[in-house]
Image 1 (cartoon, rainbow, N blue to C red):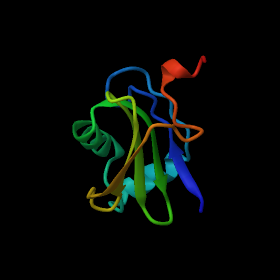
Image 2 (cartoon, rainbow, N blue to C red):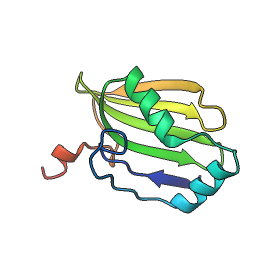
Image 3 (cartoon, helix red, strand yellow):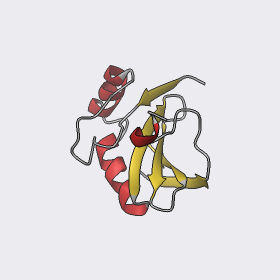
Image 4 (cartoon, helix red, strand yellow):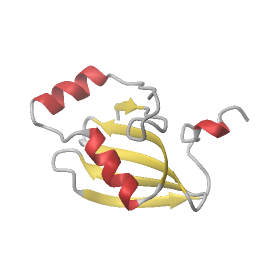
Length: 110
């Protein structure tokens, strides 16, 4: 399954300079055509549901599902899945260990 990854390491919403890794042009085109909702809006919604540091956001282009990973104040990694077409929260998952690419900025130097 091919994924469009958008790495927004703490700051896309919080105000720091974001890092973006993705085929953002494709995501932009989908949004401009009205096929998906704004990732920025969903990040805000995810952070209100699960306070913490936003680590990663991905769009699965086949299923049109956003996966937003937040390192929570409870020291757990929370994955929130949203339908990219309407912004509806589909499900959540929490884990004590991150996926290989789900580490907060302050852990990257370890």
